[in-house]
Each structure stands twice: as structure tokens, then as C-alpha cells.
Length: 74
Image 1 (cartoon, one colour):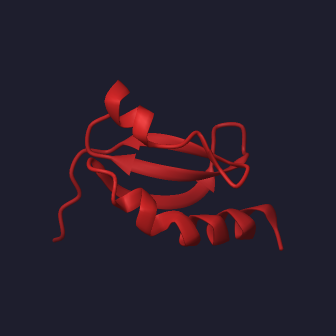
Image 2 (cartoon, rainbow, N blue to C red):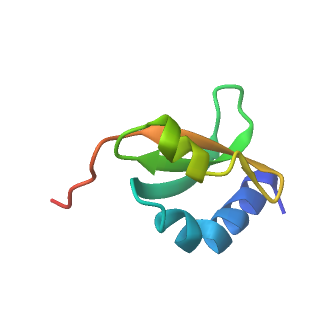
């Protein structure tokens, strides 16, 4: 299993829990600026209160918060 496959597997297992956090609008698996695999948590608006609810790591995988605004279906 590659590092990215492992991150996708961890994200899949924790997706429901992360999506239950008010303000979270999505999740994804990707890489950070240095190329390290991470779980991305997309939020409507970043705030210190929201950051306290989102873990820094999940099963040893780093979590990155990305402010996106609201997602809308088209």
C-alpha cells in the first residue's frame, strides 16, 4: 500500500466523524506543500474555535485545514 493509499483509507474511515463537525464542508486526501500525504478538511470559514474541534492527526496522518467557503451543487 502506498502512502497516499493509506491516507485515503484513513480518510474513508474518519470521513463521517469529520463531516459531523459544524463548519466542515468536505474532506479529501492529498499532499501538502512539501509533498507529504495528508487528509484535507475543507471548511466554510476557518476559525480558532473550529481548529480546536478538528484533530491535527488521525492515526498518524497529518490533517490540513483548507478554507473554501460554502460548496454549492450546480
